[in-house]
Image (cartoon, rainbow, N blue to C red; front, side, top):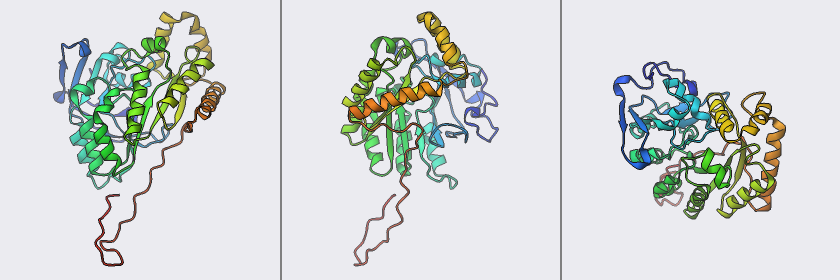
Length: 348
């Protein structure tokens, strides 16, 4: 396993120092049903704010990822490739060898306090899920949310995990001082498809309960309808059922995203496809012949269908690739108003 000289090349950081050294790694296993067969590598990271490459399609510039690897075990997960940077297997190893940055909250506090930090938006859950099962044991997210709240730093969370409900009070408190965005990933509601391609995740209906619960606390929650899986989850009736369920949960928006197969994920997904749906292998080879993404005509067709359904069910589809608009900080208010009465200074 390669810990030394590991740089965060998946985020194209300029520094060439190791993210953590071998002497800072503790490996643990837990003999409990939820963690049987899973190995945790506890590390003390040297950096937690990751800059996204300028060429990325992502509508944000900074991320925080307290974990590497994910017990959700989604067969299509694009982040599988990142495990190869540690000389770990991108298949079963990605699902069962989990790197835990145990010092993430304290490190984030220190980095947010730096004079160089300008208070930019921070996205979480964009690589692996920060509310995967490991979070139930390590509880890194409360400290991370508190660190961001203390600085009134805008942030967003994307998750498939219902564990986010544990932190509802913290999220509501953060939303009073800064911009907080929440999104839940639900690509389909078909139970048979869910059990085979996302075996470690909560069921789609439970994720939609998260959308509802966040909305009830005043935190608007959108749904990333991802992935739409060609030939398995893209029938008109399937798309309709999914958008209808998303609307019923009170989602503020729905953004469809067609399955993409980057190196690392592609090999694992195609092996799964060959075992479960061998008749589709040739169709996938043709559809993804030009690279990781389905053809534009196919993506446009799915987007149009989902947006039409969203309008029908009364939810506004978020435009794919459009960054969330972060309001600029309010100008400082004077200590006294024109009448000489004291005025409470604003944090933002």
